[in-house]
Image (cartoon, rainbow, N blue to C red; front, side, top):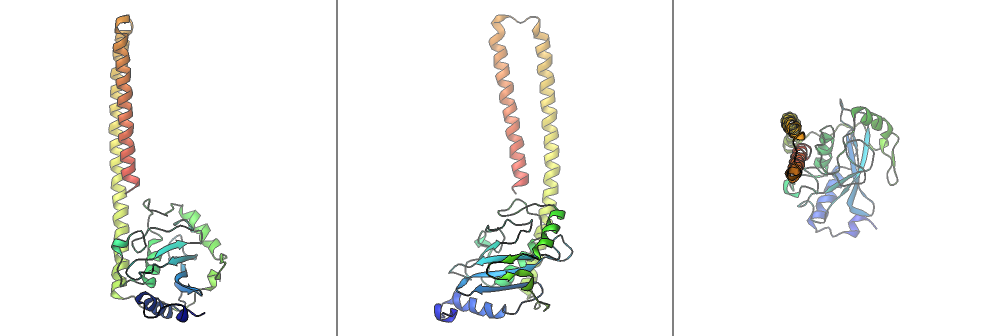
Length: 263
């Protein structure tokens, strides 16, 4: 049964997806996407790794799961090819994916999602859902291996792209890609500042611990020769207090680390 006969062509979502399927029918040199033969709301796509990055020369395949409310609601994106940037077989977190419906614009399309995915690949992960932080060398190895990767539905993914140049970006798409680049730069700068703050705070905590340890050591040395059995309870209380202080310092360190790595 053809997709035209299977779905209600009066549905806005179906009409929109049919139109996008026609627009994306011809592969380009950077991306290709099409719906499954029996499911208009699940698409498979292939994108080429962005040049001048550790993903250059790689081919990355995945699934796009579209809600019945599309384009009013965003799609979910799942990578299938090992890549070192995103986990495979897991819905990834992007501003154009189902994890952020508040930032989705109905005017965006599957093409917009593919362009955004390519732009996001070299951006630091910042601990977002479905992200990985492999080294550049590891990602380059995966990029070379991806040339031979095959999908059980689509076959060898390297054959899915062509030499056709992508259509010129719309003004909205250009602005969106610029926003991604600016966000990436802000994230890197913010992470550098946070790391500096973390180092300063850790040094302050270390000084505090050393000062308290030195103070406690001096007190103990002075009292050792004159300890009276009646004072043993006081010494025990001091030991408990020191343990509590140590726990509080550890908790502060954990909060600082969480702030840096889970922004």
